[in-house]
Image 1 (tube, helix red, strand yellow):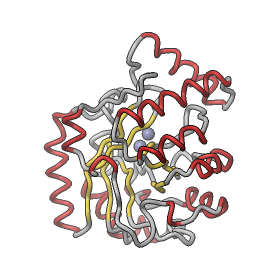
Image 2: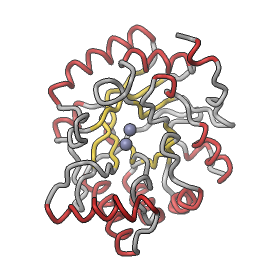
Image 3: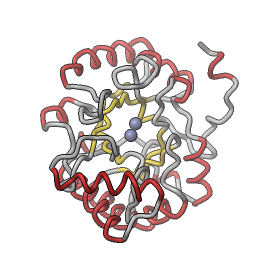
Image 4: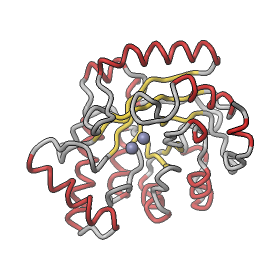
Length: 265
Ligand SMILES: [Zn+2]
Ligand SMILES: [Zn+2]
């Protein structure tokens, strides 16, 4: 098991002491490893915490139904016991309409340890009128050529989500769609939602990160690993954060501080 990790020198966290990977996928959605595999990798990387965050039900084909939660919880508890690090069970929910709606019920939120939410262009829209939100982003958003009105709509959908739901982390903001990062960051700062710097999707870019930084928002650095060997890898994210001068104090999963989660406080 060690061989697949040992050749990799990119995991060094460029000056930041990151203690948790809060965004990893397993075979419950379309990750390659089991819960145990991801936790073993986190332990190997020297992390003290990891979250298992498979996709919400609206993600086509791979979204996890709540019927699977008990089995996932059992796996999480077994791995926590086996490896002696904190293992959280979460979901990466889909933001699937202008209303900011996510695909988790209040009951789901209460029983999960951490709530992530992000926009996935393939998710099923809430209403016919939301189809435009998805279609426009599939085209212009992907190419970085959204209109001002589209950027305002995207930002509003995210802000609605942050206001309505106790989301701990907004995943890969800027992937598939463009946002007003300053306005969104202000809402996240007000409500206690963290902005993810994603190594997998390489977002936000430098300019977007600076917009978030000016807003006063807090951040997390995550792998969004879909393969076991990517757990705890954040080379893009740490490089970008360091270049932009992001202080460790503003990274919720780094430094010598407890992890504070909005959904649990
Ligand atoms: Zn995602
Ligand atoms: Zn993900």
